[in-house]
Amino acid sequence: MSAKRSKNSKKNYVLEIKNLSFAYKTDHGKYEVFKNVNINIKNNEFFCIIGPSGCGKTTLLNIIAGFEYPTEGVIYESGIEIKGVSHERALVFQQDAVFPWLTVYQNVEYGLKVRNVSLGIREKKVKQFIKMVGLTGFEKAYPRELSGGMKKRVDLARALANDPKILLMDEPFGSLDAMTKEKLQIKLIEIWESSKKTVIFVTHDLEEALFLGDRIAIMQHIRTGIPLKIIDVPFKRPRKFYLKEDPEFQSMRRRLIEEFKLIES
Ligand SMILES: Nc1ncnc2c1ncn2[C@@H]1O[C@H](COP(=O)(O)OP(=O)(O)O)[C@@H](O)[C@H]1O
Ligand SMILES: [Mg+2]
Image 1 (cartoon, protein in one colour):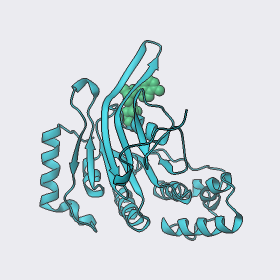
Image 2 (cartoon, protein in one colour):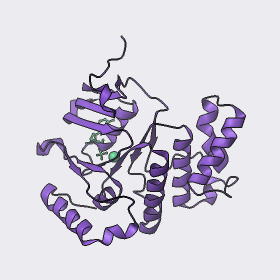
Image 3 (cartoon, rainbow, N blue to C red):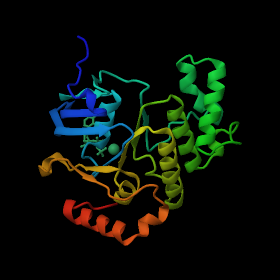
Image 4 (cartoon, rainbow, N blue to C red):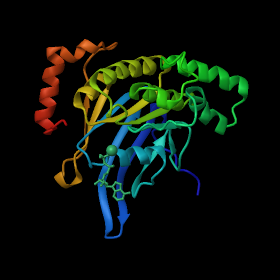
């Protein structure tokens, strides 16, 4: 059967999530994760998703990536139904996905090689993305020689080298210390601003979502019965790290914690 097409494709949505429901099949029957999720994401948007552990954030990203299929509903990418994985949608996880037996250069080159990109283009792209993430000079290093933050940069370069339209990031900075996390947040904004990708960024850190996002989707556990809500982030760009200390930023953070009962870990 051919893929469905969206009726809204003129509207410049890079993703349309329509009436999406998902349940895992387990030994004890169906385990419902979420129901009737609707989100439209614009091209070049920085879209954050926040919610407590277990509410289905990773599951949602996996469906967008094409690793899982919706139980009900549909997702369109640029107007065409998603029916599997594609290099247009790259995932970056919390745990490093770098290959320990490959150098930084070889890690970034990996996806390009798999896609049979010619040597000349490969060299150009690998250099470009290593530079973009700030790892020039570390091409020959192995992951064991790198800090956690540097490994994350390799992950990011590897994802970017495939030139995805959409970058799906699942708590990518969740295991980093506060200072490294801040540096990478700023790096990511820089990359996003210059490459004009669409980013879908899952975090359980509200401050991170407010600092990075154009909009934030707030997910709750299905058992609460509270549907997903989307809020606009009002802060102008470019954003500097000291925005986090701004009274307006802090008051918005407090308001959201109270309104949505978000307890940060
Ligand atoms: N493969 C699976 N089979 C059954 N249940 C799962 C599976 N993966 C995740 N779950 C359950 O689905 C719910 C949502 O998981 P997940 O998407 O990982 O949440 P989050 O990323 O928000 O922490 C959780 O209750 C989790 O235990
Ligand atoms: Mg998760």
